[in-house]
Length: 406
Length: 186
Image (cartoon, rainbow over all chains, first blue to last red; front, side, top):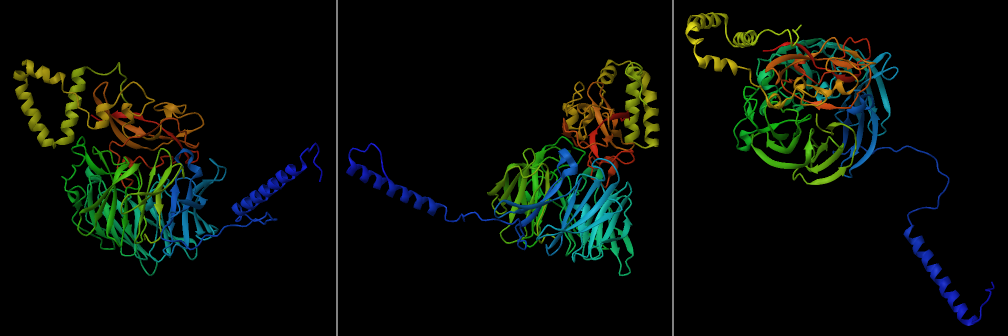
């Protein structure tokens, strides 16, 4: 190695030595910093597989109101606030999770050529670990309505999926999940929605203020009973998104004013005397539609309530507004003990939310959204403290589905 | 079909109609006969009193909701336009259509749900048919969510969540909503 124009050879050599040593040290530091990054090798493409779902793995439904045929369902790890995958869920879609969370079903509607051509109402079944489609059945029809959880339901044992149809008559399609076939379509005239109970029954809310209770017998034949009328839709309707539990058939029907009708669903459904969300919080009960101007705290939003079954806790989105503000998002979540009917917590939300969801474990997480930005908030359900914020997760996040809810 | 603004009857006609409609909605026939009978008997005396004229001049129906109390009758591109009291979705006026006109490339639904909205300009309430325009995906120019009288889908004729695109001859894909006046409600 020669270095031209060196007058002081000795000092030059020392400088070179220092420089070389410095370089070696720098290389060593760099190599150490990149210790986790292997030297690139030729790679093969593969596909991620999801671990069995934890209580904090959930589905988030995005109805994509601005371009409805592009709806989707996201799979989210709520502990990390990360997206694990997604599936398409087109045009006013709906989702249910199997009782063991190993599969989920997406009810969706497509047209053969985008916005035209033959209409396909579909029930797609996905494996939760791979998000591979394992069945893709064509349905007779399904209701096209801004999606509500109770337009699609699954029996406690996962043997039946129920699809609400409105074409325009009201009916419920019963799908056998083993054969993937619609075994029958049960007319529910004057009624809508599905609140499933047990392995072979469901109830619907009706225009006359009653419940229609449908039992599917061992012979596969349906029979229907009606409860007595217990609410007046004109004056104080019941929210369609009221929570229920399939296993024991318990439902908490919440009215626009904030009355809660605890109901044991079944062929002989028993509706209990209602209690008041406001009175449970030490306030005066809210008036019905006869006093439309009175501003007070009221339940409202889209998926405006959620239930933590084992903790006996009812989560309700609340806002201040007049009577016809039932679709206004909640600025707070009020949590009630379903046994004492008292409010046990009150949590302010980062932004008003049209939806609330909650996981079913001992360390529950709560979910809300900002409908203007599509941000998805993951909050501690006991304190309301923010755990994660998934920025702009979707366009129109309308509800969540977490393991163990049914 | 409604008479046009110019062909509307006299103030007294409209007032009489309005009052009778309200009475009819709240009382039995027997009650009506009793009250009308009493009113006829008392009319010669009362009609001469100035107080009854003052009453008549202020007998307009009052707005029945916070939306109605703030509604305007000038800008049909704004969510607070009076006839949008229960509309949910994209205003067709902002999508190339009008208050009762679908944009080109779409088709109106023959069925709809019905709302009742207060017009601050004439003080009457009108039945509004919220017919969807169908066949193209969502237009998304001006989007509103108003809920006066909106009931859940088990009352479908009063629910604004349902895609009212049955029988349009297009796909049931929702583009925007119109708000056609179909009659007087008061």
